[in-house]
Amino acid sequence: MRLEHGIEPAGINGGNGNARPGAALLERLAEIDRDPDDGPSWFARRPWGIFLAAIYPILALTPLAILAALKPESDHPRLAEVGVDCAVVGFTMIALQFVITARLHWIEAPFGLDLLLVFHRATALIAVTLLCLHPLLVASAEGWSLITRVHVHWCIWAGRAALAILLVQVIISLWRRALRLPYTQWRRLHNVFALALLGLGFAHALAVGLEPIGATIVWSVVIAVAAGCWLFSRAIRPRLLLRRGFRVVVLKEEAPRVWTVVLESQPGRALRFAPGQFQFLRLHGAELPAEEHPFTIASSPTRSGRISLTIKESGTFTALIDRTRPGDRATVHGPFGRFSHTLHPDDEDLVFVAGGVGITPLMSMLRYMRDRQEPRSVLLIYASRRPLDVVFAGELREIAAGAFPLLTVVHVFSDAPPGWPGETGRLDAERLARLCDGVDGKAFYLCCPGPMTTVLVRGLRRMGVSPRRIHTDHFAL
Amino acid sequence: MHRFRVLGIYVLVVAVVLISAIASVAVLRTTVTDAP
Image (cartoon, rainbow over all chains, first blue to last red; front, side, top):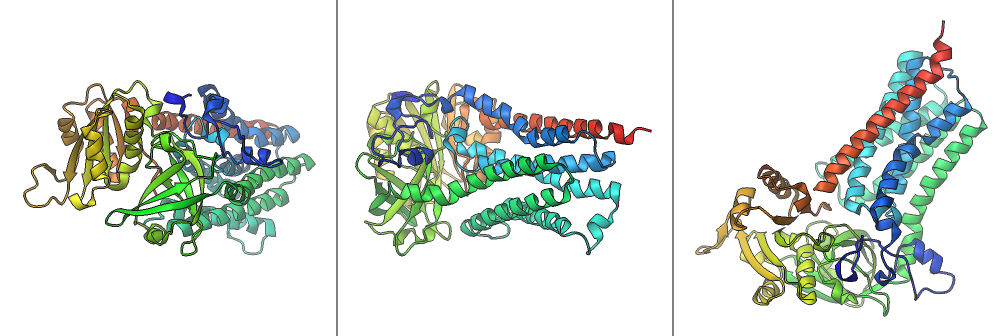
């Protein structure tokens, strides 16, 4: 899919005219330095997305099919055989998670990273269910001592440990906030647990199985693919990204606890992105941990030699963002996501809804429309706590005063100052419909905190707005 | 929102396909074993 004006969505193209000799292939693998003028990538098109969707269940079932072909008759009673087959498919799905989450351009491009991460969670839950059924079904048919006995073969303990790690992985992922586990620590644990799970599962599968040598080959290939993706995304790509590092050139306080960081690329190596997309940032400043975090790009792609990120102090890492200094090195991996009006050229009457710092992707789109002189009609409903918390207030006034786009800004303050004549309180769908004078024919772009997004989406759906006309930024930490 | 709806349906279809395949393979592999 090609976007308007030659700007394309996440990870569209290959092409690298500035790579060092010998590094071109590696840089291409690292999905960096794409040139949109090369035309749309085949990977970003719908047929490729349909192909990937069709091939996923086939891949998940391939080891089971090969193992069944190698040994058509089972050694187990039927119930235990169901349990064994659940484990084969569940473990294959766990291995495929490493491919899905490696942020590979050829997998991300047709779907968007936000969708892939939701898919990752959903399929992980299916895999966990299958893997939990495995010991229960096998033990119910062959004896509960498989679960209860202490003195068992080491491979049974490997399986037990793998299952325990898997359950811990699920608990810390689903209830990270309730457990008050910082994102960075969770991510480290998630990566280490994933690799441990892979190794223990592999050992269990090889040692407990009585299948012929073909089974060893099948599992070795599955593990090699998964571990290769893990190694590439966690170790190789970060080093490749350093070769095209960015530099911090400006750090500016936009509002209380909200900072804009402006990054400058190396000459000829600008980041190409669609307005509204996000990227992963790693700052290499001496006073900041060199951790990778996702942030939306607030600047317009029309000025892609520099990108600006507007960040609110809301977590352990972002609380230190004011320690960034001009001259600090940074690496950027992206862009990702499909939250962009440029992907929906049929949407003409746009309603942007921002909650707090959720203004950033919408600001990128507004700046893009201004720079490209797009004559679109945009109503921006901007919910903040107080007038003091409004980000980009001056620039929004300037854009609204111009002709491109035809912008109207409505502020809604939950803690309005005395005498404020405008909207106050919480924003819900009924108020949203009133402010935009009915929902018919309008396209909604929502970038708000999770609960607010849920309320608005449910309300808009109740009013009959098609899901095709409701776009949300689903990437939230 | 439309993308996520399609994803929900897709995941359900995949789950049904996988469970059906597991059951089918288990039945096929144990038909001889369980035969009287």
